[in-house]
Length: 315
Image 1 (cartoon, rainbow, N blue to C red):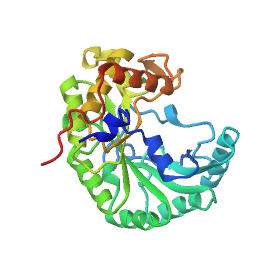
Image 2: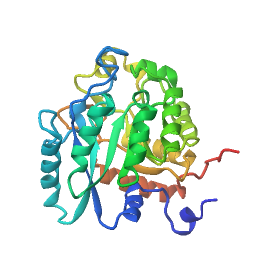
Image 3: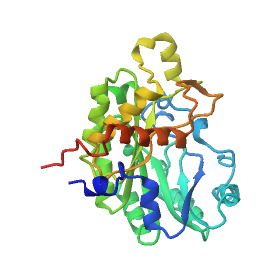
Image 4: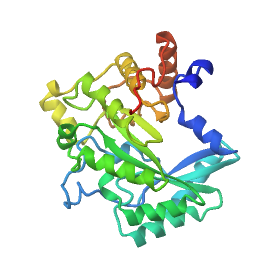
């Protein structure tokens, strides 16, 4: 069932390798903050946003909503050009909910980014309750000319957890959005957080089983991070018993257990997220993303295991 993993010694499907197979040149994401908000922030579904979220944790210096989309793309290209002289770019609409506006405004914003010659596609971060068929039809048209991927923040497949972290949608909503996106021929990426409050190891591993049933192309796995200024940081101070903060070595084995149950056709973009030290409360592992990935790969070999080893396909 898994000949690539066994004979080629590839123990998980790496998204970077998928991109290399699709593009002749190196591809780099350029983050863009287009000034969006979220329905669980502005009062339409809730207020306060997700309890773990502080968007400062993943916005590069050039990525500010006070700048136009064009300015951010231009500065992003300059930022990365000194590292790699020849490369292509994906405009990555990252901060908040990047489909939460009128279709007219969204088209104008996306097409402004796509107007740059070396920008070959879009990656659009959003929520599963903020897409509709009109928007998906538009993205489907764009895929005829550009690389398009929709990134859905799912975070958990457990409805109690989703309510607790103030997502203001359930898992059924996520399932529907992912299936509809795939039906339109659009690539899908999903974010999942391992270690959210009150989630047992069994619950965490069940996420892999449920996500494996969906037409997902790419998965971003994040460890839970407690970030200054968030409601979750306050909850940790008041109720530390709700949390299990994994050590790096505990998390490595948890991530591998998760991989074993995951559909091997889902590419892994990353295993961890890295927040600025000045914002991070815990866990402080002192490892960069590439260092952590190397440890995952080493442990996979030690355990002689691979992505999908315990995956059971749908009947």
